[in-house]
Image (cartoon, rainbow, N blue to C red; front, side):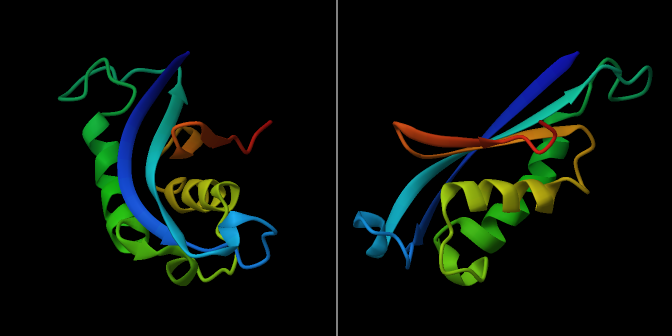
Length: 123
């Protein structure tokens, strides 16, 4: 079994409308997104020989999504929710990317140096 990880960064703002702490005020994060792909079978021939998936293929799926919905955006508006928690965002990203990335296993989203969430839908 192989597990590949590709990391991306973006800046985004949000507010958790119903939160009973600091997050009820508008604020932003320097997010770190880790996309994890799992699989056992490597490509047997051609330009992707001995690869599970080309890292470039991951970028082709992820970068347009980051640009459209997250980087320098107000995430409440782009995801149409009043409470875009890290958990909510991680699941949203997984659901968005899974049709484009065979073997997508998990999404990890880090919103601060000490706070992150991992969404694994199959456990």
